[in-house]
Length: 373
Image (spheres, rainbow, N blue to C red):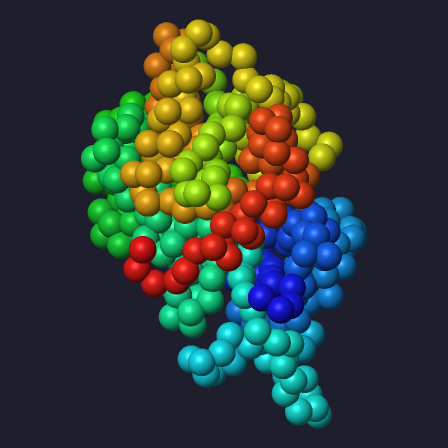
């Protein structure tokens, strides 16, 4: 093309992971080569408004302010931005009070750095497909299946991949017959993990060691999602992750695996352990695994990636048990890109640094069309 490709980096969103999406954008924006691409930062405010953001990466980091401002958010008072309502163009149109609409030009690819519902779950992917705009990452179905941990387990199990036993509790079931929900959960055996079925960043997750704590855990998860997953705790297992990235010819490649070890007062990899720098976690990149286990883990990562129909990238999380057996915990179609995130760390240890990783994803999206494929 006669001009540099224009990349719209979209972040924020309406989910409870709004702040983490902003932090991710604060890492990705400066990593995009401005000599190769024109970059437009687009924020989605908590109320759903799309705005033309400043791209000030300092404002997008954790700890930029005090108190409630410690977590960043999109400035919803900025000028509104929309895709042109014309199927023949993919222009971005900016609207400000007391000024005529102006166009920023055609968008060639969207980099959706949205985590959680209304972004990572196939919704924005469907909108972009309808608008004929290329985008980074998985399509509608893969995004939706991977976001919903209950359906993800169904798909992975159907493909012959091992998953942890679980039951689903919906808000309707909890209201109608809470005792049945308790009985189905207890039948799995304690301890249990209770989590929003379509959440992320460990928000709303509780570890339940005894029946007396189950109700509070379910109600906490229901605050974030009307569908809750109650899952067997992988007692004694190590948490190991693997990155999957398509090559420019479309073949999935795997990173070196990495292990997360929780220290201090954290019983599991919760929000504070993931994102707040003063919290204590120990990371082994690459993970030290018994002979053959690492190769098997990478093989299962590709199988999981292909089972849900992923494109572009994914992070596959595993439980590694003392006997060397593996269980897929979950698959993330838009893993975090914060400075502490495992996905870029694993690829850096595999020989692909952060700017090259971001560039690979943009190039993959530019080479891929929209629609059925």
